[in-house]
Length: 299
Image 1 (spheres, rainbow, N blue to C red):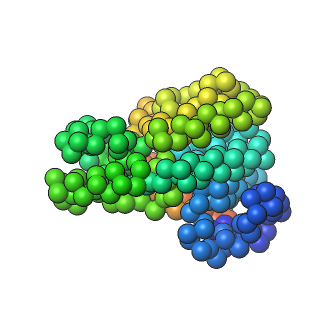
Image 2 (cartoon, one colour):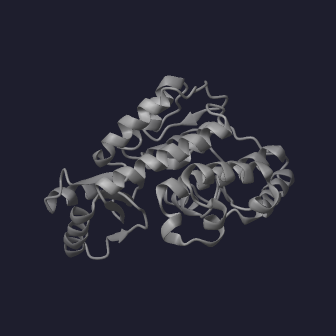
């Protein structure tokens, strides 16, 4: 993850050195070599993903590719705030690092996890009630018309998966995460994070930013600060966010950072072949995106 940036980008290396010293881990080594168990700790993976994502975003800007609108899924909203000019890149890394540490602390108090359920939101909410798990299992991400992520403490989640598979065989898939994210189980972390964020200056965005909490463009710095905190205990409204992007006639979507999850979700949310969906997870990908942009006459 981010090996080309680590070889060539001093800003990325500097940020990784700073966070490594702060949390007492060699993030460069973990980023490149693992082990995966350490990488998946929120205190490690969240600042790393933010640094790598912003590293590629900075390279896109250097190539003359500026977004008309920005959005980030869950943690991705933190680097999105930086791309929109609400936070500086360095502030975004600090925010992601604090967010990750607080989430790890919450997970230590209330271990849990998440699972993808390949049903609609209405079907998932009905299933939760049907198996008697209301108030114990929570909708964490409404990702697409037929993909919802649920979250909860370890024992209720295991029970939910067993019961759900009995009712709807093959409907669930456990996710590799380290805690019960986007649930009331993180309320203490949310309160601590909100208090800490009070000292972080948030600016007006320079470009529209669609917030996870509301699925609409938000421009008030105080509301954006509040959304950054309540996101820990509230679901990500990604399906509605994608609908907002379609309503704004988005025709090119760039997914910045490792993986292709969001590109896949874009297709599941109705973006067809008329929409260019590109992954930006390497320096070579930026070269290709710039070439495609030039070939298309700058559109």
